[in-house]
Image 1 (cartoon, rainbow, N blue to C red):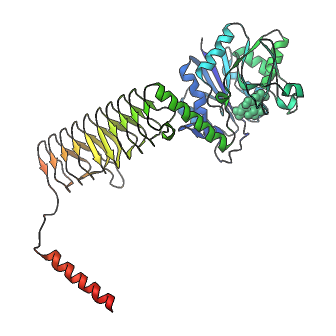
Image 2: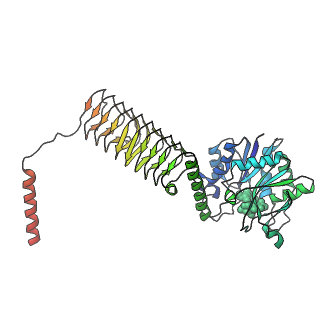
Image 3: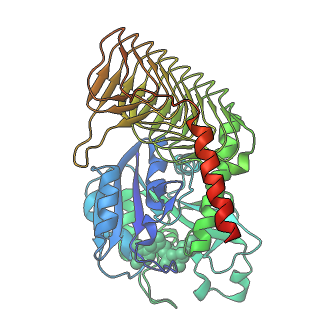
Length: 450
Ligand code: UD1
Ligand code: MG
């Protein structure tokens, strides 16, 4: 049976010193709330409901952009986590199945962990709470247990010294049947040190009416919550270290793992080799056996099998490199399809272009794709030789097996098999260089004497 997700993102509680809502700050190229929502990608998910604060328009827009089917509800006043959950109640009228509460600022809860919680539900617990054991429990809520049973959760503010000594803490993630969750959340009072409606109180309420609660534990790192820029940097580091480990486990060679940066959606195939200092911005897929050489930056790009990119290459959105393509140093590619075996080896800009199979693009080639208002496309056929320093003024087409001479400015189409030469004719002046040097050196000597 599918699980419904409720993601709480209304509380401010932020010490980010930012004009942006906290949950929109990014980790690995995606807003942190997207990480929380994406845990559902690996599970069978029912409804997804996000609770935003008053005026949470940016959060709403971001969430709907991720998936327009996500329901967004508003909690005008932040009266506590139970109150936030009840804001989602209208979305669950008559809903069957379980719901799990996540926080928008806690991005690393794993799908496997939610599955373990589901299994605990299936084996009889009415409420399942995700906890973690830590030597430094700080101000987390404490899980009070009696054998395997969770009897209540006490917030730090309300805890006795003996309860504060408990090291088993509440992560905030709670799972129960949606109807039970809503009913109990609506029943909690705000009679506590913070004057808030605590979601954590549903455990004690449930216990009183004979429901059982159980704890599932995870590593503390998984429950990492973000409140400051330092936390954000720490979260980024956790993400990157996991992504590097995953890549290597999946058969990718990372020569200097700590210098390679991944995005939330980077895919790299088996036996790919990634040299040091490579950045994968969002939207990159690299097929097996490709090599990304040092200091390259890739975004929104697909790299085919056996392709070699870099060093110092920049692949921008819309780049499609087929198998065995070579992209060399100081080359920028944008919105371009480069077919099998084609080479762009040095100092070129290829934008809005189609390059045919086995074509060679000489050093310093530029597709002049922009006229200041519109973008235009350059189409180059197969087995073409583009001479160094060719400027292709788009829209323009170069046919199969054609050539352009070095330094040509291509302004009109070149047919199959033709050669385009468009440059000033060279004239040599016998002895002129030597005479000019003599004159200039004499002038310099005269001026330094004076
Ligand atoms: C909560 C738990 C605590 C747990 C800790 C883990 C309660 C009462 N306490 O405490 O046991 O150890 O998380 O990090 O649940 N939110 C709303 N609306 C509100 C209040 C909060 O949407 O009215 C959201 C916040 O944006 C945040 C989450 O709920 O994402 C948790 O709220 P927060 O104030 O951080 O709770 P803690 O005091 O940290
Ligand atoms: Mg908190």
